[in-house]
Figure 1: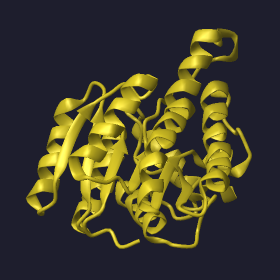
Figure 2: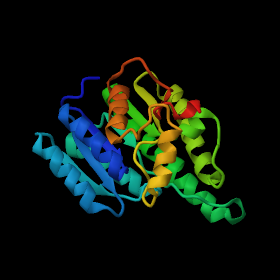
Figure 3: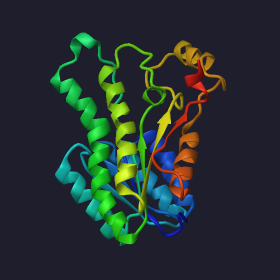
Length: 245
């Protein structure tokens, strides 16, 4: 897919989302950026996109709310007269000891990570089908993409991201041939807030490429998946070889 003149909706992903937005806008792609509580970050990303000559809109929505998702997808398509690309980055990442897992914690993880991707995908696909082509890129995680939980305390999160990988495959089959659906599975890209220098070094030591990847590496993967015309149903790990250890 040639990105010039196309329109993309980016759902969530404050830090990595900025790099993805910049990569798309540099290729001439108009942007709609959703936000729930970080309006200022979305506004800065939109301003940077406009500075390189593309249109950019920011739209508030709770990615877990079906009516809000339908509204924001419709508004994005109306703003540009089309919708070609959806990047589902909305996510939560929380450690929860197994003894503290209850229905609320479980629903929060599944809704924020998997249900949001489903809701946005179903709404966006209807517009993509009308133009005869579209791309959806979901965000999973290197651990479920590798089939190994590895870390204790992440049952809801791991399950939700595994669901995203399964959703990607299922949607790829049902939305073909017009819409290609793939996923990115990040590994050590940017250190989480609150991580100590010692913890960061341990991650580096356990990563064959011996560094954190940086948000730009995720942007490169997203660009590949929206430009390709013959890859669908894949979940690509971007983890510096972390899964090999």
